[in-house]
Image (cartoon, rainbow, N blue to C red):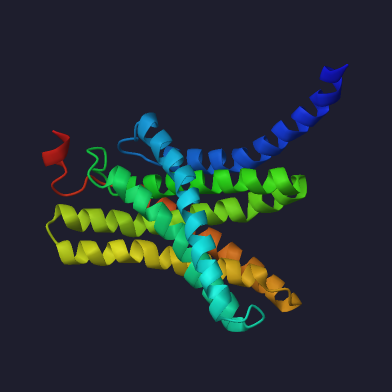
Length: 249
């Protein structure tokens, strides 16, 4: 009798989790299959996805800490509070956490020897982050939230990961060529550009004025379109990084 009572509850919970996980898996497979030259090992991809999950905890601690500090310094009802919250607290905490895990696990990895690899790595970390975040949201708020996040938040994190990966790949390419200054510059962009996009995404989404709904839709469509173009171009123009033979062989 007890089993029949809890079965619908367990089934519903698993359906919620599946609705949270599947969009992330679909996008990761798309990016992974676009790798034409030398696909990364499943073990490395798994470690990066797990790294993305781990980065959510670092981001949460940072957001709580600096969010509390911000609340004590700036009135919550002010526009400045929202700008600082979404750009200065949430976006920086999340994107920097992803980047730290990304660089720690891939920068000196022998598999990082092609231009497109950075896009795969950054997207894997970002989707690991989105996956865990999405599970938390949908188990609390249900299928409606799952549907909305499946077409906005999860692909949104993937897009931030694409931009991070493009600049991260350029940083690695310049590192191989011995240009440390340009490498550092692109590593900075690998954090700054996703932070700005993430902050804009959250800020526009938080606005309740009707006009901002259309602004958010347009922003998301453009973000997705540009990311899709970047993935295709990076995959099409993929090549071994100069000097990568020293590590590979």
